[in-house]
Length: 479
Length: 70
Image (cartoon, rainbow over all chains, first blue to last red; front, side):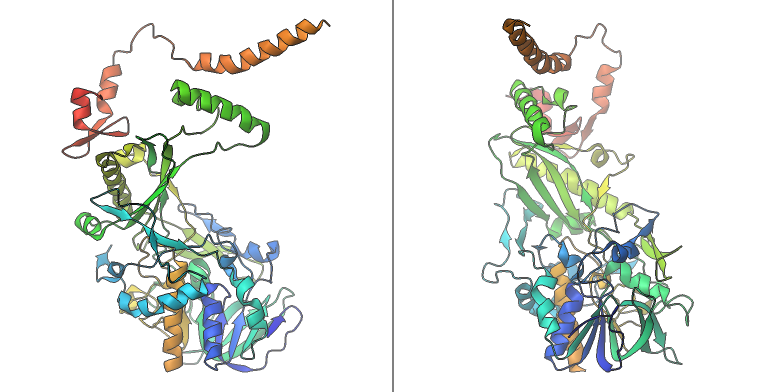
């Protein structure tokens, strides 16, 4: 059933599960628990469509590198699946090998624990299981890089695909316009008894469930836990001061440009660093994209004029002298982009700002930090891929200044993959959730989503989020 | 206004807008070569491994610097 909490405010049932958040993780958990016969209260803070009033809650105070945190996420039914690109690549089994980075352990589980959920995750994301993950191109770089193998979801919009199923479900009560504003603990501070929610008319109520699952993403999940500070001043689940720490993004770095030897070659290429190269250099993994720039970035009549000069300049080989008109590349030229693994780092964190939102909750203080380990990954990968490109006789690479000169600041971009802020660990001192995604400090609070990633690999997170979510469902329904 | 004048101004505009930027972009001959020009180029050469160097960011085989390109 589907309810607008701005209009219908009576919730008097005691549910088996309360799932907070309707992104890919929340919807998947609610559906699967419902299929098992469990009663589920599913909460969405926003409405059924985008609204400024809801989205404003994502306004952050940014103090580190800026990754556009407000608009990279969406605060309405379906969450960020409403604008994700659909690129899917599973984790490698080596992502789960025991290791230590920046004094922190990697994943406490092995890949074999989430691999059985790959098929179902692919089904949810409308991926062709028969086709699987195809190499993007030939194996042209022979030594340290393999062709990346990925596939694309249509992309699946969870609102479009599952809203009517949830509306017609007997076991799921979904309330939208219902913002979770607090969690209440029992006397011993061992379990959650109630969750407090508010609508947009300042009406609040408390609801109870046997178990609670937070599915709010890599920024909102820690913000909510830190804001629940009425009974414990440091927030819920934060006895080791790990909630919000180890914020990770995938690093989007314009490493440089390239020129194909064959100027008629217009094919883009994608490569993935191999384990030998990563382990030998003690760096993170990387996905490297060689993308041809075909079109000038302009519109209308100006585009015609710019294209005229572009073609003339390319023919006369004076393109570097004419690029003040517009950024462009000649045939055979392109840019090198990346999706690089960031290492977990205690100083990169989400905490609370002094500013508050319309519900009186402290906004996010967003401090994204990139350390020397990550800079080494970027520089060593950039130099290696440029050499491999030349060795393969594909053409030449011109690297950005900051790849070759470590005194220069690296220019970072973002991928909107927010990970690691309630990381999974065996030992509570190194993370927030245990190997079953249960918060270490509590008996009945669980977390699903990319905030539990111990490390992020160099793959897009949506499919692993679903694999881990499906694994959590199996755990919850087995116990 | 005579028709020929219109045509002339049209052609002049075409020539002005298409040739002027290219002319402006042409490398002007230096009256005096800066004393540290070669040193600057040398500073921009960085060995990457046994076989490759970067020159102004371009990653090239070392032998290219010795033999030149064919």
